[in-house]
Image (cartoon, rainbow, N blue to C red; front, side, top):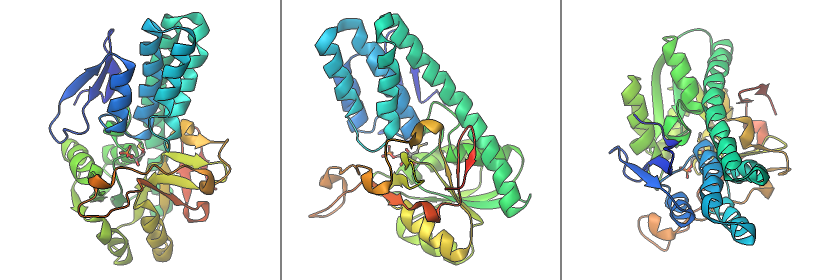
Length: 312
Ligand code: MRU
């Protein structure tokens, strides 16, 4: 599996997430194409969006100056509203612009490399925590959407925890929600789990809560698009019902995300802009298509980042 996002010296190389499970790469060399790729979810997942945003600034800086460059950076940052990593990535590379295009590129590549290290650290810390919370035994885990290698540069956040546990021989089984309407669970998470040899089943989103209620999983592990200062978590629509079910069943509900997903400027979940996507993505109509939901902090057992275990 190639890296989800990388730089080839001339452009941004992306594993096209709209084509998965077929693995197809595409190269983006200008800002218009990048904004389109972000909106269409060719590149998706909060950490990958952060790197895309930073590399986008480097792309823009090759040809644009002054207000045109500023406008391009703003356009990239606003391409999707919920995952704060996108704006954070843009901001980081933008701050390096006084040093010229090479400095912006260096900042973006540094973010790429930091994401790789962060995911490994999150994986190890999450695996350690699950061993404490659930005991050192093969675990049955439940996840939603895709917070794996294909949502980051490599390894993953929530699936990074699964990977780290799997390396220790401590994963019995994973339940992956299908994740309507764009099927990140059945198309992407299932592909990743199969590739690393983890036994898994896909369930329809409506089955998620009852799978937990029936005692079929030991813990829920999901990623995040934005974590507010109070610990409220925005993640793919359908995450909140899992948190409710996990609380009712008395099992851990863990959120795995890099520090860049924690947004001190957003006081609570009510201040997180929830992306509304094209109703035509939903079968039938008229449709309403919010792409994310907010899980209140009191339902979150712990947030695992590369630096800490936070119990909001
Ligand atoms: O709409 P998407 O596919 O970008 O949504 C992705 C998610 O909700 C992920 O769970 C989140 O970004 C964390 S990825 C490590």
